[in-house]
Length: 99
Image (cartoon, rainbow, N blue to C red; front, side):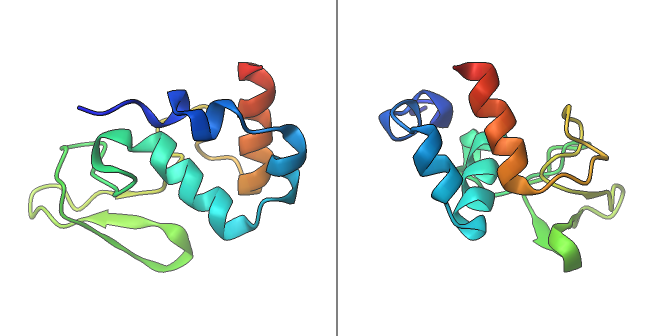
């Protein structure tokens, strides 16, 4: 298993200025990598662990297992779950908490 995404030099050396200037698409990619580091940012079901999930509208994912069919987001089961914060605001909060 490789190094955790949040411990990589790419993230450790990130400044608040770089984070503020980051595009939303890049911020979403970083959040996915932080959430699912084992699969390099590819989502898996938080309920059953199934790796075969597909993306629905509005950045939601659905488990393809017949017995599960759970719908989840990148923030499901986290402190940000159920919140309607922009992705960059979430990353800024994580950055301030870590630094």
